[in-house]
Length: 175
Image (tube, rainbow, N blue to C red):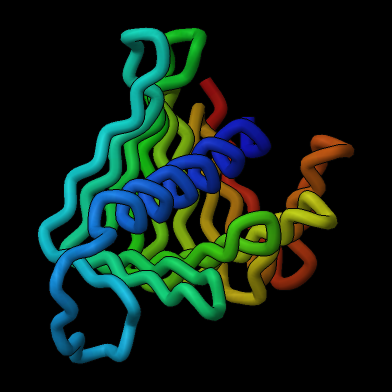
């Protein structure tokens, strides 16, 4: 599940980057306050395939640096529409992507699944080569009568396993 979500997020940011680059070729250059090569405000981008919506990104601002091949989005919300009909929502204050390398989310990161699971943390980083999601920040995972809290998180997507390495607390509702 996390593998699918991360791949979808990566595809979303990559598709947005491509769209931004192609749709602004040949236009007059303007000074950008952040020194990015390309910047847009109040962005809404929807990716479809075969008439089906795959994902939707909303962000207050998106910036792209061609030299470093990095795209950043601010105050972002991404909704993934999975093939099985489920919906997954992710929001964060900032997101960054370097295609084929990493995805970072920072600031009030919340991942919410339609079947009631919620992940909260201040930062997440996905390393594409290792196919691992990590954070050293406090995390809280809750859903279906279980709440897990701790410091740090490592999700190994290939092995379909996760570890909360420090200060782990678990609360399980019975009955």
